[in-house]
Amino acid sequence: MSKKDIGIKPLGERVVIQPLEEESRTDSGLYIPDTAKEKPQTGVVVAIGEGSEETPITVKVGEKVLFPKYTGTDIKMGTVDYIIMDFEKVLAVLK
Image (spheres, one colour):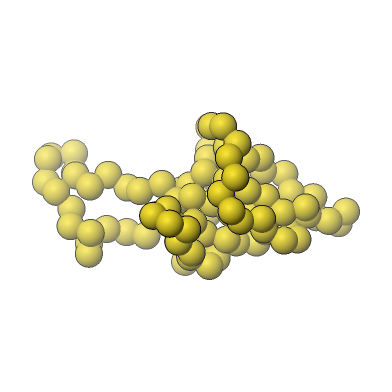
C-alpha cells in the first residue's frame, strides 16, 4: 500500500486504522444486510503517531492489524471511515 496523506496526524501513541469491511454475502450465497453486519475488527494502519521512548510504536503504515471490536474513536474523512486508537489496543499484525 502506498503512503498517502489522509489529512490526519495522530498524536502520541495513537494509530489511525482504516477498517476492512466484512463480506456482504455468506458462503452459501445469502446477502447480509448492513444492519446485521458485525463491526469490523481488522483494518490497515494508515498513519502512526510519534510514540515515546517508553512505548515505541511497532506497527507500520500499510500493515493489516486485528483490534478489539469496540475500541477507539470512529471518524469519517470525506467518504472514508477511520478509527483512531491507542497503539496498545492493537492485538496483532496479520500476515
